[in-house]
Amino acid sequence: MSQPSSPTRYKLTVAYKGDGYKGWQIQKNGLTIQETLENTLLRILQKKIPVTGAGRTDSGVHAEGQVAHITLDTKIEPIKLLKGLNGLLPPDIRILSIEEVALSFHARFSAKEKIYCYKLYRHKIHNPFHRRDSLHYPHPISIDAIQEAIPHFLGTKNFKSFTNEAHNVEKDYCKTLYNIEIKEEGEILSFTFSGSGFLYKMVRNLSATLLAIGTNRLPLSSLPALFAAEDRRVCPGALPALGLTLIKVVY
Amino acid sequence: MSQPSSPTRYKLTVAYKGDGYKGWQIQKNGLTIQETLENTLLRILQKKIPVTGAGRTDSGVHAEGQVAHITLDTKIEPIKLLKGLNGLLPPDIRILSIEEVALSFHARFSAKEKIYCYKLYRHKIHNPFHRRDSLHYPHPISIDAIQEAIPHFLGTKNFKSFTNEAHNVEKDYCKTLYNIEIKEEGEILSFTFSGSGFLYKMVRNLSATLLAIGTNRLPLSSLPALFAAEDRRVCPGALPALGLTLIKVVY
Image 1 (cartoon, chains in turn orange, brown):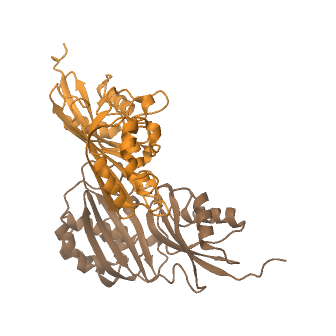
Image 2: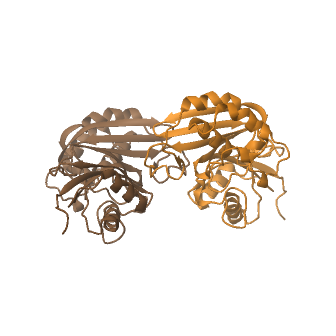
């Protein structure tokens, strides 16, 4: 009676302003992006469809290009699903694209590179247009000192000192950081990190460390000891979520 | 018993994200920027202080650099007042600066030039980060056609066709438009208008007219008749408030 089923996988690229959500992953204590997507798919397809993300962005973290996959029993026209989802989702979550992919595609395990950006707003008064997507930091920062520190972070290293242990599900603390780019645009100073993957709160811990170096609270010479300690307590605390955006996942 | 009074005028530069407010000017039907500022001054100074703005931004319109003046009985350190205000104001309204000015300074009548910017977001999916400060317009636009039209709007002209009459308190419809700049930055297309002053909804009506020209809904050749009509009904309707920002008031 029913159509012949042929499981098909779809890759979704999703943008969201994260300040209204308790992060990506379904939680007991509040609404998340994943839950909102699953609820919306349920309304459209009358069926519970699990949504698998490339990674769990934390509570309050934004995304310009998070990636997720879903598997459906039958083929559906991607553009129809995209329009259906965007018609029902709250406007702070937008599906940017949907494409059919091989069943072997996995949003998390197929990811080759992730790019995150941390933004600081430097003017003494925080801009109402950026107060939800940047950390207000109206203090002097030496860009030169940070630039000098960057090479010490690049390459394949053990980043255990830069992750919040308690929530860490990883056994392996080795990650490869390809690049850290510093950009000044008007009053916004941004650190863009690209790497093979990131540990729990790693970008916010790295950003805090770069900022400590740029504000003379941490000498460049202490970096080798910081890495060697493999203990997050030797590092400055992670910067708050609101300044962080997942820019892109590369496959 | 009281200190000798010496009336002193202060110029305030104010930024606000206007989507939570019913515009600048005090209204019966909802909270405005002016009212919020006056309420906050009342809390700090224990006295009702009128706040006079450079102009009335409409409901939903934003400002990066609105200007207002207040007159106080006594001198007060501007930086103290600024910190006091920003400490109590909601974070979508920020006082960017306060300076003592001559008693002859008037936020509205001393203004020589105003700069407004209208933003369109062109990607087919509206960006969650810009959905509150740009109009979603995912259709083809000919920038060349708009560039060609711009000189027809510049100079001193009667702009009666580009204002919403009913609310107009002006007798004189002549204004001088100094420049219209078109800028493409990523998915954002912006029109920046600088002029001696603007009539009620004039920027939004001009933006609608430029957009109609850029989308082939209005031929360039019809512009002289449009100006000559002195009737807003011959023009495309004003674009919505959310895309408009008052950038700067020049004195």
